[in-house]
Amino acid sequence: MKKVCVISNDFKDKELVLTNRITTYLNERGCETVVVMTKWDCEKEEWTKPEGIPTDAECILVLGGDGTLLQAARHSYGLHIPLLGVNLGTLGFLTEVNSDGLEDALQQLLDGDYSVEDRMMLEGSVLTKEGKTITSVALNDIVVNRTGSLQIVRFDVWLNNTLLKRYNADGCIVCTPTGSTGYNLSAGGPVIDPTSDAMVMTNICPHNLFNRGVVLSGKKLITIVIPGDRQGRNQQVEATFDGCFKIKLNTGDCLNITMAPCTTKIIRLEPTSFMEILHKKMSLS
Image 1 (cartoon, helix red, strand yellow):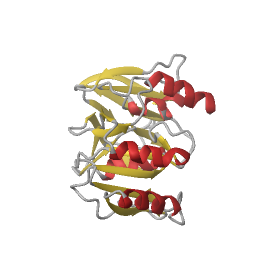
Image 2 (cartoon, one colour; image 1 turned 45 degrees about the vertical axis):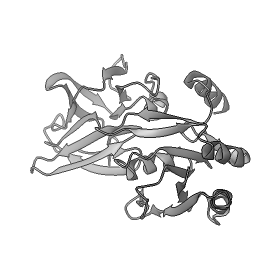
Image 3 (cartoon, helix red, strand yellow; image 1 turned 180 degrees about the vertical axis):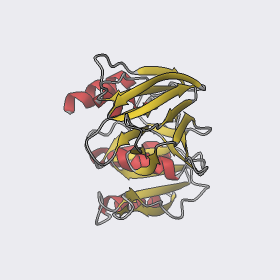
């Protein structure tokens, strides 16, 4: 390992103590490091894109929590650089390294003693009734949810251009296997092995007696159409990508979701199975 990029979260490592600890260790062993910062933009309510990620980096070390790593995956999309998360948050399903074992993990990285998992991502494209298209990607999930008053949302779900059902609910979660342990799990959805190519669709507080998540092939096209409410009035909802980037939707707009053409590469230092990790993390929550 000759070159590493470090994405540091200025909220989680305010004095850059851990950032400097990492760069010092790597530089002393002949590894070039480039530090880029991500900051919370209060006006846009999202993390800023780190400027200056070197395209020739062999690894991106992400300092923060799972949320920081999710944003790093979005911001480095298409660069094909594997990510390794250093957990400064809480549960940390994606962030494998803890600060107390940092030097051992860095040495393991330098020695090439690790594996890389490919995690599928989602691509979501909002098509407005005016013909405008807005596209983004997500590693965890894309959520359509209500905004404003406490009213349920009506939305039609199509699979490969065939109508599945019209739903009345607080919203809908479409997640990857990686994201199945996030919001989807809290909403009662199924947990999927993170290396699978599949999508899970789970409704949020649906207005019916039966609610089951649906597991779909990653090759499916999910289309969510926003009709008028029961009185034909305009509905205002939003699509949120990985809990941060938001796009407003109104009656007549639709959201197309499918498997993104590029994956996120996650570095694994330990051979621990997914089920072992799940059991350990959920026991701590």
